[in-house]
Image (cartoon, rainbow, N blue to C red; front, side):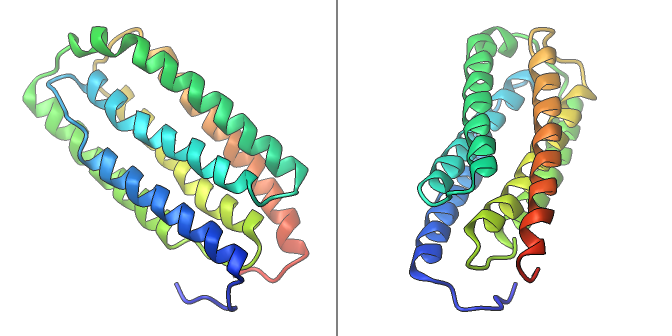
Length: 194
């Protein structure tokens, strides 16, 4: 996407870090060691997704003075850390819940479609010198990706211990999107939108 203004040194530093985190997330999600368990595969693909959200939120906190966005970022860090902890606790047990090859293939086909859209939307998010707006435009597709990945997993037989974790991911990400969309509208009232 063409940028409509020259970016400041500070914005460039923020975006450089964001893009490095995004590159690492994409690499780790795409290279996760998979098994014949959709439950296990979901976990090993979602953990790097969560870790990226934590790192992106920490990156934002170096720059933002907007209190509502600080609270959103801190909430992301807390919720994603807890979700990672919960998934790691059941990862080995979930690996024993196996699925037939055709189900694995269908799950992964949907996963690739979801994640490619998410990666593209995050990479192409409009970037201006308003770091607060940049973060929201980047994080909303990240959250949408998590919701769609979670709904994809729920279409298949999965480990019972994983289901409440997935439901929690969906609820928290939906709430986060609503908060960020509301805040972005307020921010854009004071600035020209992309």
